[in-house]
Length: 228
Image (tube, rainbow, N blue to C red; front, side):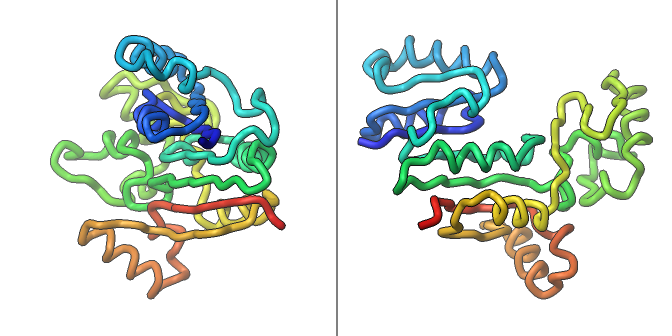
């Protein structure tokens, strides 16, 4: 019976699941038109009974009505958003009075694999070695020039003009500051949520060496709501 919004819905798998659990209305938004069209086609083809419940739109969150959602979900999208401050402000505006936003994202850029694999692909023997933090050890311009020669990836002209990547490079401290400034209340906040042995080891290391949090924080999970 709740109104649900997913930011960065991709091909809509989570929206389909939420709609199937009895939501009144589910809206998935994404800036990738192909994702939105694919999700809409899948709904029409495989889930016609959800036509009045489930909707997908191509466009920004600013176009949506204020106070219109009881639940906002976003997973693995915030690290790709350049104007995180604007999106957090819009989340605050779009939530209903008792609404909650469930946000999880990563890997953060400065973590061991925070380039999502793109820049490290230019490092020697990248087919064999994962090169943790490798994208931080070599100047980005050098990596892009090598990628351009090896794989035809276009050269970039500005720090945030990266083909295929769109990573905002924010640190855990940046995210904490932006959330604090957003006007949203933190109901839950955790970092380095992991189930693998390596992930658990990094989680422990980040707590033992807080001065290295910037380089040892690979994901963030949070529940946010409106301040009383």
